[in-house]
Length: 459
Image 1 (cartoon, rainbow, N blue to C red):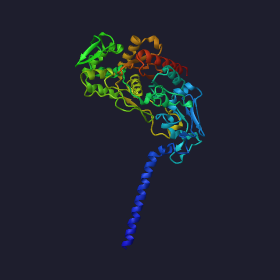
Image 2 (cartoon, rainbow, N blue to C red):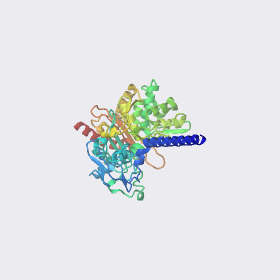
Image 3 (tube, one colour):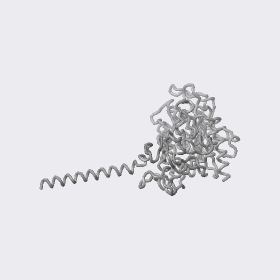
Image 4 (cartoon, rainbow, N blue to C red):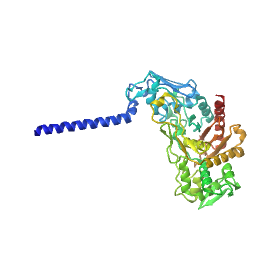
């Protein structure tokens, strides 16, 4: 009897171990099988690190941007389009972590939880990936950057569709260069700067400080600030490019007066500035189709004196992610409601295999505050940037010339939106070490937005 009891306990223990093993395997399979299938050593899908056979990556107009058949990879016929969209399609070797080939490789190759790594011929399984991007518009943006490091983003602030997502430097994925041999030319070439980079924001951050002032300073619209070109705050000197004299908030935003915004920041306090920055998306990772954007950082909660003054201006140790700031522009345009950007076409069959990637909306400003900011940003264009430069675009915008230290030229920013029902587009442009935000980044924005407006109104 004792022997039978021991054997029974032994069998029970083995059964429990087997059950535990099956449970662990099932959990890991559900959680990680997609990643297992996409490992480059999987010879069923890969050869020399490249996908053997995939569905097509198409733009919003049906233009084929990439496909692979029996190890032969092909891209769009235009080398400009190939360069402009390399960070979206990928470079064939999996070097761009946020590209469709890497982030959505399992869908492209037709992986399924039941059949495993298998490319289905039936397109209802979603092996083709359709994007919201417009290939021609992306090519226009890439050419406007003229080889300079930076990024351009344009999206529909009503629907969340990204029409343009371009990062530079780039290269032709059909003729992959030796990136390591030319590190200066291809510095950060595998990085999608719109999604995965963060920069000193400079004066575009004044829109965040202005939002806090509108809500927290009862006399914001009548209060006058005096600018003599510089101001000493607790031993730290805050400077302006030129003396602005007596200015209101509206005038201070238009001429980008550092002194006025330094005083506003000190009156609001570090906690308030940080609170409004976090409402705008700082200190968090905005997600686009499940891909986490870089986190812009603001740490003013305990800042005082000169540090707080410079932080409210967009300097100090502030950083901003271009995609997140573009979404903030969209929230101002959309009466205070942020619609998260996305670029995987939600009408495509791919969504049958994806988790819930529905359009996400969040109110981050009151309707009244958003409308006031819209008015101020429109004034920036008509009074300072020149309406003739953005003819008929009904542009609302803010420029930024972000100092980065050393002997380097400032980063050039230009961000805003078109206040038109037929062209509900928000945008951001960043040109690394480009100099003047309104002149350099503004010129890029003008070219891209005019092309986007033409496309939308001719459809």
